Image (cartoon, rainbow, N blue to C red; front, side):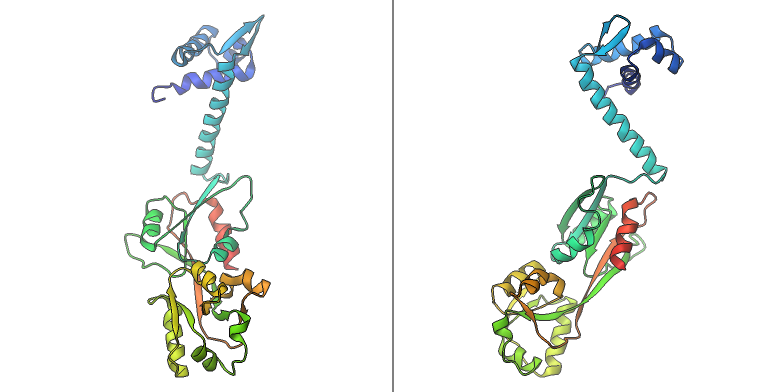
Length: 292
């Protein structure tokens, strides 16, 4: 309602909570007649009586109760806004997190776990490509982006990237595919593999490893989504190169097992932010907890 006068609404709210026009007028240093005029103007604008008089007391009508509920919500939001912009320590109610669409869901969950379920915090989680997420961060539509590679930094968008974790990658697969191998080279030469797509750090590292071992692996799938790699490995399509956190549930249940040989490969997880004049106060503790 573009032409709603919030002064009228403020006066109405004060009278509604006091239940007495005289007392409210004295508290606000107004005459009773001036206060009555403000209330009547709001009633005219809304098209409903907001009070009924019973003796000397004022009681809300049904429309008045609805109006008071909205007025309380409106002014509470205003107080939240002032507290946030004055940085008085009052927490904002929402945190907007962007995550690379291909990023491990288990990692995202572990990062957000400290604030999940808190009644005072709403988590908004969006996934997408790197360019869209960085644009959302620059446009203040996101507070934070989770990714497995730091963004390029330039003078126009000075992103801040904090490494949260660096997880060693393992070769994982169903127990029957792992059985009987004498060495890592033997296993990779024998079994098909599921790999991340070209251009990723894990893929480049695996190609270097294969060259060092003198093998040409049979690639059964190239996938840019860790969740899909997890599903393919679980279905027995081949052995997968992944950080164990990606297949944590399957490893615990015994559906997948890790090969006993170290690969010397790892994947990094990053939190990317931009400097803000009014940073979301939830962010600092959340990033600090994840980076420990």
